[in-house]
Image (cartoon, rainbow, N blue to C red; front, top):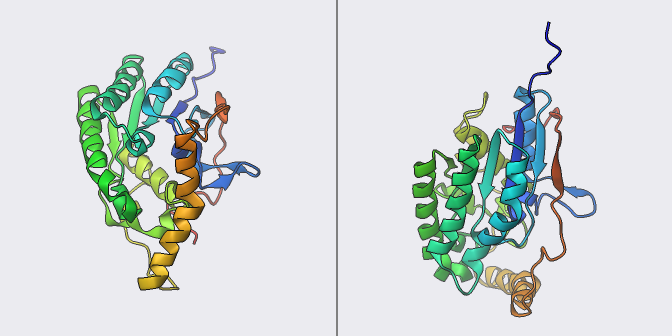
Length: 273
């Protein structure tokens, strides 16, 4: 009888604030996020799963590649998720060829290393932030390039940008740039479905029940937009003008492969308001 222990599945997540988990928890109690939720689901079917999350908020695609790709390869992952590009879309200067090139370089290196790689497409930001309507064409362009790069390298794509439910405000945090806990749950479910995990299905695409309180319209809606500009857009623009990022000085929250235990009650199909 051999004393060799079977290799445990290794999952590594690369990306920016969404993958880090902003909007799902906080920096005091801890961030969860869709990648943690996906790792929990993977652990339900792969006991002893090892999981690392190298994502750091504020990173553009070039920074994800420069700072996270080599450490990810060194961990010899079996599964990798790569989600980057939204921070590039939001910058005044956006070069779709350059951004997609960094993403494809990560796809190429990780698949060449033997990893199964998954990514996702992004929703039209104007459906969530009406003031961002001029950026809609950038998102469409980037999504098309991600799909083409994914086909070239055998990367799995969760099409999270195509379904009407993604514009539901309940899936977004107050800043409208990061998913809410419910939104992170839907993203994790989308990834699980794309990966064909046991028990996954397309219910993540379904609309939410009608809200108990009607969404604001007219002057109330306009007031909400002004409050959002003052509370969230203004500070974000201020950091950009000063050449600063929310991720300055931050390290990944989970840089090493650690055991991820499955948690009762966190099944991807279970939604809580």
